[in-house]
Length: 237
View 1: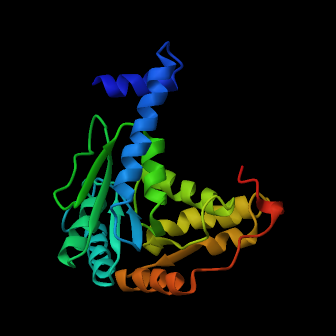
View 2: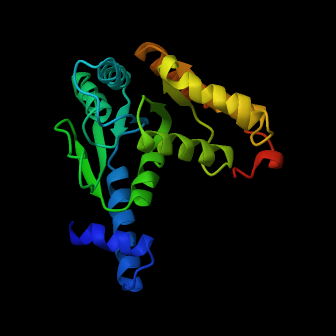
View 3: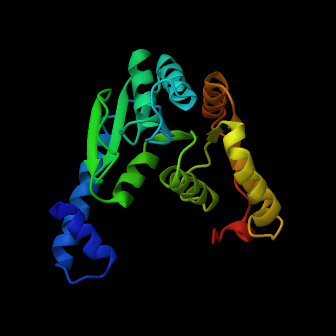
């Protein structure tokens, strides 16, 4: 394990460490990320999905097609920069002659950078990376994935729900994959009054790359100007 991962683990586990040094390192990482964001041609969309799917998998092929369609529409494509659905989306962006961005993360496995990137930044801290996913994006498209993908989905919804970012589309790709999660949210979380009915309007489920891109482009034109509901739902906990 390299020194950078050791430093992050010390922070998270409250092991004795140099607080000033750690804060400066985090600040430098945010600065590095923001400088990269400034280089991204806008508008841009962030696509998330599993690192574990490979070429030929339907998710990989759908992500590649989606990246290509966004690029052909003049959008930059941002991903986590790794393999799987991320690689596919970046590859699709290059297929379509577009601009391709990877915000990678230092991990002990899975997360090598893919070869289809115009901007390739590797972060040490997840929170700095997450901010850079959100900052330039006009939309999120979420392909099937594991814990990391789920984390990005709910992070995005929380930021939108609490008005920390503008209310823009979050697209879930693949109704078969997402339906059980949505059933739980409707049947348990919503039924128990833990979210508002309007919160479900933040999500759109699609099954084709064309539908994903069309919905995002339409929302961008109209700026999805409807607001989330008022203080009754402001507490995302």
